[in-house]
Image 1 (cartoon, helix red, strand yellow):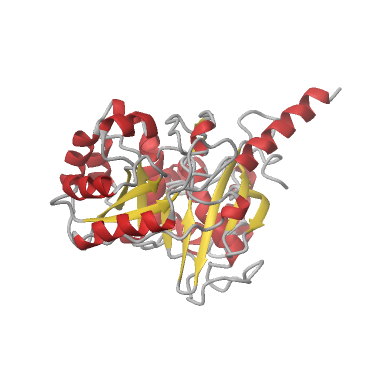
Image 2 (image 1 turned 135 degrees about the horizontal axis):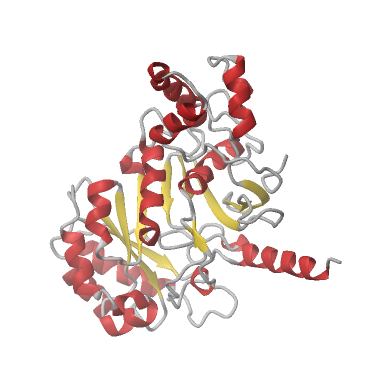
Length: 387
């Protein structure tokens, strides 16, 4: 059964408290609920079960009751594109928002390297921020993703690359040699995660649970364009690593590149960064800086960046601009990027130049949008043509 045909709520994304309510509704005695919650939690998040029948620690009747009322559906991969560099972009379908209709689509990107694998996940369908250099920002916001749709991206990726205990990858070519194929989670896909705070927080609690998906919080990075009031709250309630989409060192330029800056300008943003809980040299904030020819790539810009970040334990990711159809910007010349990086490095900040991954399949930073929008447009045309 495809995700579009399934009408039962999925347990993916359920917390322990929500699972306890499920067992209460199924008339499991109160004294046994804690044990049943622990068992089902383990089967869902540690073992990646896709069928209640596999949960043989439960009675046959309880498995049948769960199967009758719930599912273990995660987002369903519609297409997989594999880049020449091994990056994989999955177009994934969610459960329908209304009966009989096609489910909405999101994009998730997996970046394998020899010793690690990074999964870039989405937090919203579309985006409200309209950052002028970002293709994703040209797609209107449809809605927030639920905790299950966010955590479900991690689970569909583990399904696909065989990252569950004893599992085999559907396509093992190019996967990391490490035992774990997905080692890092970055909330850098579609959407502004801090505009979907509670759902993202709840999904990352599952991701970080030692008996759940079991990612260290130092292996989870949330990237924000600068929703300043939510930054300290995220640090207190979630405590993952933090990345800031900075991209400009002057308010007048950042107002154009990242319009949220008009609400929370650079000084306020960096003030929130300085106060981020648990900030230290071991837990640095990453500042993302896309290199745009003639706009933000001068040596003077590099020196101002160093001045602005003084006193903040930080790493600066310099990102060569990834072009997309109709983009109004060009990437900085490589020599200019290197000169910029040298200034930042000499000031004591690690400033790696991010190697573009997945450009040929529009999976690189700032490029997510095209396939999901094309697919939805095709589906709308098909619906309109139907008798």
